[in-house]
Length: 450
Image 1 (cartoon, one colour):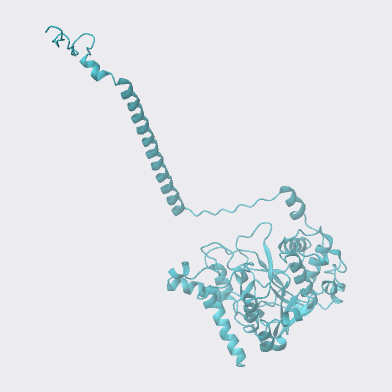
Image 2: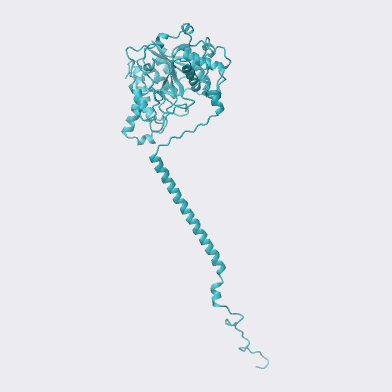
């Protein structure tokens, strides 16, 4: 067409998909992603390996867990790890210290108020079984063999004084301490026992004026007295007289408490009871033929086997004299330690037998401290919530614990001052409520002796 343009087939160039310049191999359409497929394959393979390793670890953990269960089902495991400096053991434990030259001297004993007729009288009750008795009910069964009341021919002190000590500057007296006092005064023989509550307060009125103690003082009269500790006065005539360590004290009341118990018993004699204790009501006079401390627990700790939370000695006992001599001649005790407690008694015991002197007795652990043993034979936790494990007890378990409590004399609580006995727990039902019943009988002037 003249003067115009024409659109011809030659002007329209369609790409030729099959032209050489635009040609692709068909196989190329399939082969081009090779590099992505290889990466993906590697990822899949790595994930599979990780999954296999994880599965193997799970199987290994399950197998190991099953193995542990079967091992514990088959074997008993007893593990106790304690670390002691070898130098300390060589220096403080192994040496057998010499006894004093006077405490067991007959002339010296004759010059003191020590009652040799009482101390040397034949004993009808043997308080030591000769075995540690860590198995089953052995210790409780042995305790049950002792008479419930003193035998007619027993030679006992005409009057037994129970002593305890309270540091009024550390904690206020509470219901736990009141429970201990009731458990002694309401259950022990009225005619021949009394309690002295010692305090470090300058005046006994610091305790006697407390509203929590006034009802007890009114109820028990002269069977309960409160006295202030004068360690310098009590130490007169002993190896600790005028000693610079008499005023030593710590924030746990361990060092000064251990000193006070020895001084008090030397001056007056009787039974010492730590305030972190509750008495079960068994007559303590049955144990009065012997002078004794207690076993720490059923494990027989190698360097700490003895305990003084409860102890019984006669006035001016040569055993106590030796303890005071060892205090006076040994290095000062570490604060918050049992250097003047458990370790002192052990040291003196070893010195006595080395000199051929019959030592004081050691009560089996369960007599006063049945809580300190293995799970299978100890008394249950006194402070456990009864809605927990006790709730699952059957009648057989309850009767078993009750018979154990009836066999022993006390339950040592090892401080734990912040805890109270839960209502409905075994201590409440087996100890506190029976004691409360005896207190009520006491108010009525009746004898609640079992």
